[in-house]
Image (tube, rainbow, N blue to C red; front, side, top):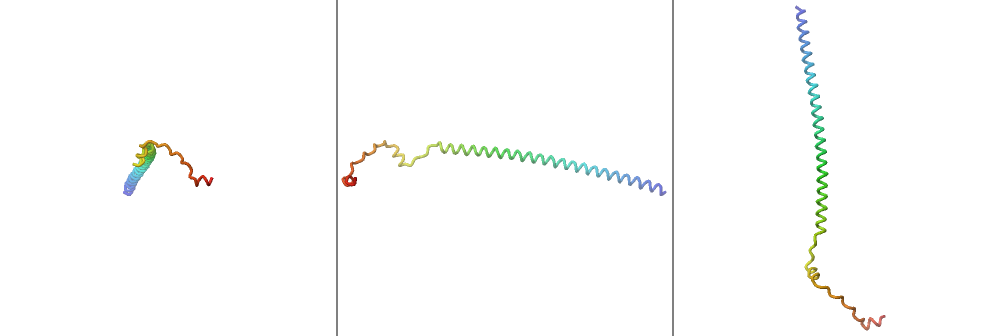
Length: 110
């Protein structure tokens, strides 16, 4: 009877060992799967970061172009002249006055 008990215990031990091996293999597969998922997620994050940097560079370039265009438009646009300046600009240029003869007191100082 002890022989049968020993065989039963041995069979039970084998089943327990097989179950433990299956759990270990499943855990190993899970670990590998999680590691693969982490690597894939890391790759996707790096790719997204590169795309974000590219878009940021493009936006900076577009802002630079827009700022240059605005500056060019501001420089090339005629500026409004003060109302007195407009009136003065509308008048014809008068000839410069001729120098008057020096006064007698100025002649004496020569």
